[in-house]
Image 1 (cartoon, one colour):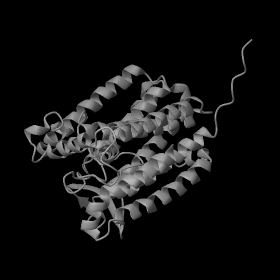
Image 2 (image 1 turned 180 degrees about the horizontal axis):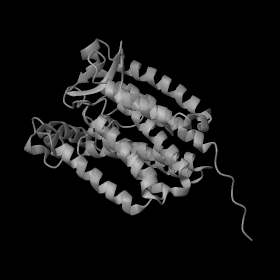
Image 3 (image 1 turned 30 degrees about the vertical axis):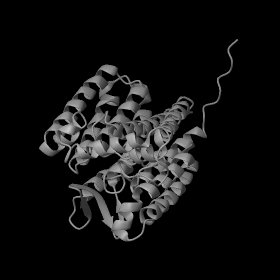
Image 4 (image 1 turned 60 degrees about the vertical axis):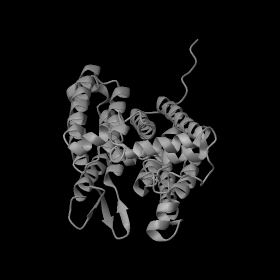
Length: 358
């Protein structure tokens, strides 16, 4: 399943990026080659993490969280941070650009899983289980939002809330923090005129068809053009400068255009199946730390796919979240594959079957 998603991703990156790649580099293969290189690195990371003793990984949870926080701060260092399209989200090291906020998804999950597993006997005490985790989430969310990066902030929050909910922490405390988090997110989203117009454009894209509504309108045009079976692989018209970021955040629109409703539904079903298997892995995990990791990674992949596809088809605001395994993006692909490797590791260590009761 993971292999199929990655193959679909490579093929669609080649198709969706061919025009912009030719314009920017003189070759239609540049983005595809870069994505392939990152996929190789990600596959190696997944293989390593699949067989790594997770207890050793757990020992470095605080270190990982600290490094993620430093990475989020480092993007603001002049000469090191890279700004693109009004956002400062990357660290430039020669020709390589790394996005710390993507790595933070795994770093925060590792910390939360370790914290809850370490306080397993006091999960019903909110000041021990919920409050410390939410304070850490608040700091990390603030560091991500100042980049600004609303989409990743939402995904990190969904990962944390999913793990807390599955751990059985006090529901009232979780609900209070949830209301506070939603209010803070709405306030930050609405606090900027540009961000407010961008976020709300999905409600009435035709109210501003040349600016904030343009991308969603072109996305829907591409999806509608695909019909049931698509216009054919490589034959998209939207990627010829009509649909911005066709090979990154809006690659699902190209899938719908070239492969049609059938191809789009197949991709959605792959994520549904991945989510179902992830839940099964979490349920069968042999220890709490493993269960929390599996829950968080499953929530991460499924929620991120839902947020991306929802934005592309116009039922959710556009937040710039990539489609896992499929959208172009080196750090995103590397970290997502690393997370998949951890999930496979947990799957390799199921709890022993309970003896049948007589």
